Length: 228
Image 1 (cartoon, rainbow, N blue to C red):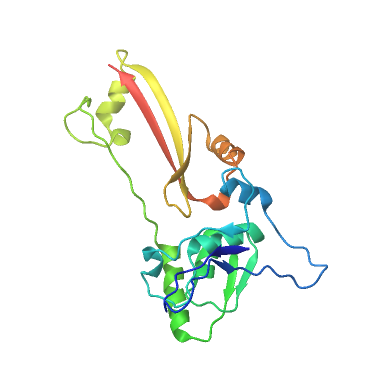
Image 2: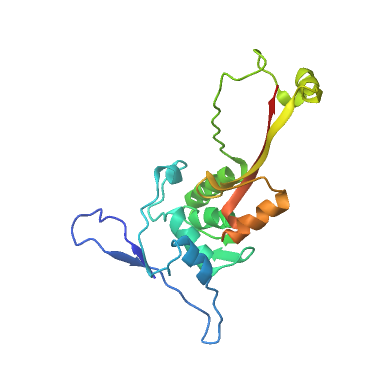
């Protein structure tokens, strides 16, 4: 396999067009793992080719420090999704900036890393801890001038709203339950399903070609609209 190589920093020779990824096995009898369907899904339904266009590590990947041979998370995640299964043990004998470890956690793989440099171990540890304890959620709220009450209140705990719902003059016109699946790598909504149970939502999530490793958490919203 090949990926697009990083820029030539010395400016003293031609820049490499690709960087080779070695795919090796213990012996001729070794059986390798290749998740063909997964790769085809990631490539918009087409067979994944051996040359990948993946940009260098982004700014957020270097916020805890830089490593001279740091690889992008997107590259390691694709390798792991292609050649390993969830729960497998991944060995990185040259841990470096910790990209393999970070990508393994994101893909729900176990990982064992080694490095002789204490600076590399320190950098990797900080990156790994940030992945384990930080969750960034962005929510957008829109306000419409259709409120029955002028004051802000929690509708789920409102006594006035509960009384209103029980009134004979109030009619339920719409009830909607929505499940939002938040992506593990993109950290945005990657799948949405409406008016279903949790079990059915997961079933439709899997039927769409997604797997549990794609999602880091899920949000459920329930909306009821009454006509007074």
